[in-house]
Amino acid sequence: MRLEGDFAMCSASSDVWLPRSRRSPAIARQRVLALLSSVPGGEGFLDAGLLAVSELVTNAVLHGTPAGYLIYLSLDVDSTRLRIEVHDARRDREPVVSAPGLGDEAGRGLHLVKSVAVRWGCCPRQPIGKIVWCEVVV
Image 1 (cartoon, rainbow, N blue to C red):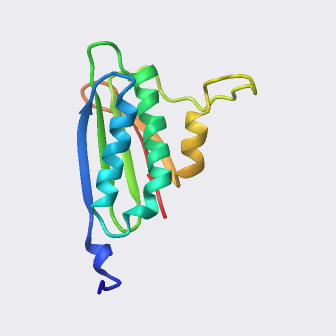
Image 2 (image 1 turned 90 degrees about the horizontal axis):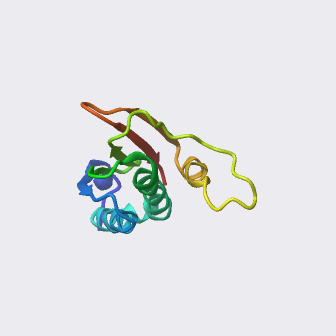
Image 3 (image 1 turned 90 degrees about the vertical axis):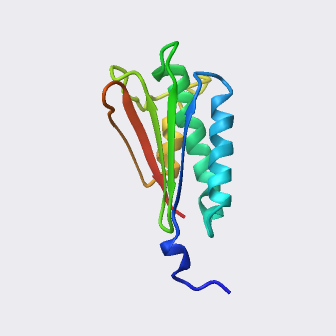
């Protein structure tokens, strides 16, 4: 039997360096799945968390990480929210929510993140790069 307050005290996190590779979004999704499977109630964040991490890591691979650099993924979950942070090495390229045309194959990632996240943003990372983050709630 689980008490109501048990999950409120439970939190978990996961951090990993990812290569600048097309495989990295899949690795990131696996990390989200493993993290959320390890906490009571984590399944409530699953769909939105998988979508958001996939889009943020894909953007870091395609737009935010020069050759020779890695991407840092930080995940943190508690009873109220899942926080996803993607750190890349390019401070000069902030994320842009674009207005893709109907025939465009790209440009919808941040729209998707905005649709599943209660908050998202971007901030500088020291000594180089930026952090693009979002928070997902149940």
